[in-house]
Length: 136
Image (cartoon, rainbow, N blue to C red; front, side):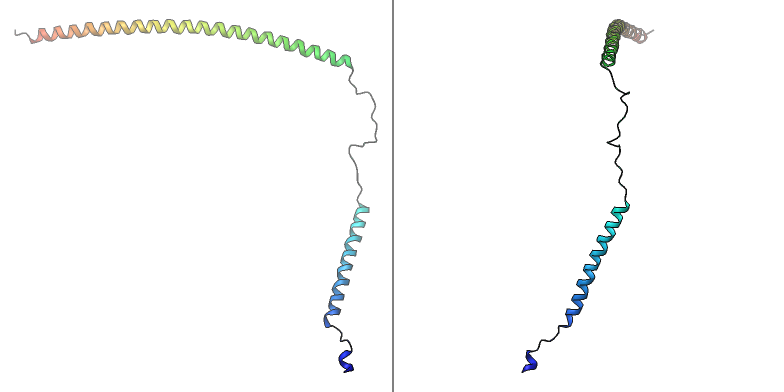
């Protein structure tokens, strides 16, 4: 009876304890590795926020006004050139339309002349056929 009351050691207890200790040792090794790597890495921030440059590279208001005036003048010049090109294109287009209309008129005149000549040739052909059909 007393033998039944005494606790029996669990055979899996040692295996589970070994796995828990190995798990904790692995986590400790990972943390130690990360800490050593973090110390060895040197972080450099670019561009350097604390480095102050000389104030030689600034833009004055007069420079901006001058560049704006130059840009406006150039824009106006380009606008005038564009207007001239538009007028020239319009003139060229009108001249081309006049030439096309003249050619169309001549072609229509040729068409009428061709129809008249075809009619005349048809009459001549009919007369020649009548002459050829007469007995000799």
